[in-house]
Image (cartoon, rainbow, N blue to C red):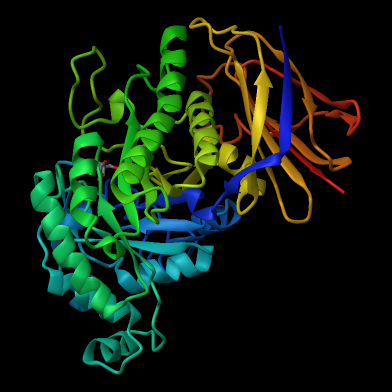
Length: 497
Ligand code: AHR
């Protein structure tokens, strides 16, 4: 057993936890959009609202889903927005391409459908534009079509297709992974091309926020050096981080369990190194946010390639994987880092929202279930929009690599309530916690997410195998609060008046 003290530093705020840090990503890949979110307006085998599955809509609205990125991913650099507007019968049937898959894409889920989805679930839309096979004019036209209040032919076309009012989409990606699937650019060429695109896009709508494609150190340095002379052309730099090294999706060893959690924790280092480049190139008062617009675990079974480490990818490739309690703990570890860097991290989108990769929601035919990661995200809801606070954890170094098993993140809302989320990574040992520094006098809710083993999953026949349950938290503001964390668990406690 580990005895741990956690001191919330109520006088040491880090910044506001933007709801955009709890964003999601919906790509036209596998069954994320088609046969996932979207079953089509004529579907008669599952309840839907104008083509979107009702069970998914309700789950996403409840999560909540403050931000949704679409339509890619690699798909974005093949996507031509005009294919997805107008009467369904006139839409182009195209080759849908992303990550090596080629499918028939009837474009029935297009701009108006996606923006209606966002409205229904309360999400801010983030449209990823095509640089790889598009033109600046094509992307200018998409922005004009969505946002212009001037009575132009494109605005009239939008009105004729159902939206007289401009949509006011703020977030626009200028390409995706353009160092790879989005055109195999070198950094200098991308930077110059980005400046050309961004200049033209900003003329169409000066209020948009543009997201440039980043990577890691060298690429980001070259990009920011180029943008130094035109800093108003970049609002966010996109970085992606997948975790690869946790072994099998379910039958992982103890070592692999800890390896995945350690890799998730490393995500914070990418944010730190990206921030260092922004400061070095743009100065300490720069306004560029870091958009971690794809993140999560990508298990070997769900890859389109064999990495030669002994786990054969499933065929055919669907990019679908089991989501265990381990994956939820890994996500919780990453979220702690997001809170610690909320002063510079401007958004984070889990990849992907339904069925594909680290999905919080899965479907199989009419069946539907929530993964442990869904529950984990829901436990974090009180942090959205709250002020992140520094947390001092005193925990023995009880993990195999001599690091502490317990960590925590805390926030405070303007009405004085506190949310504290705690993780016990240890595979076998429980932890007793003493929590101090919370000035709110009562426990409003206390829940825990755990299972017999971190390999536990939910599935079509056992949708509630892993789900949060209530726990007891005792104490007061003077002597502190105490609770017990079982091994491999995540707890969420909300204190209020
Ligand atoms: O999320 C799957 C893919 O991963 C995306 O299409 C791409 O951006 C990334 O490589």
